[in-house]
Length: 217
Image (cartoon, helix red, strand yellow):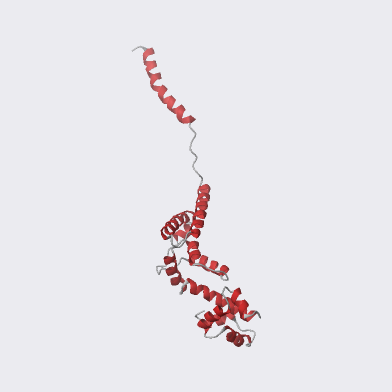
């Protein structure tokens, strides 16, 4: 074969490869999102899911459960330390969950607190949450909220001259009768009798010591 023919064949073989390199070089590479962008995206989606959970009606249990599953998966991605924390084996809330629920109750104790709101904080179904809450705090969410309100009412009775009706409303009770009912169930005394007995004592009386002496509160 003549030299010219061999050279022509080599050029023909190389040309398609060169064309392929040119095409790939001209293509715009697809940019992958950075870790920071991914986290921001997940936080945005998580916020939307949280909002959807709060707007669902109790009857929409299936949809509620599926959204909770989705938010749990996303939360594991953006908060791996909390996701890696293991339960203690007794069905209790995790430490960060108990802390978050307690902080919410403390800051909203004078308002209406729904179990659904507490569930949304830590992405649990109501049935699962109620069981874990009782294992953690030793009482139901409702009983725990009532106890917090009674402790606040006792503090007002010791430290202010406000009327019982005013204290009842300040502490989230419907009215004075509502406060009296729960206070008597917990201490065996009416608020008025308890207040008279303790306000007349020496001024060094400690509210904390009273709480310790009243395990039902």
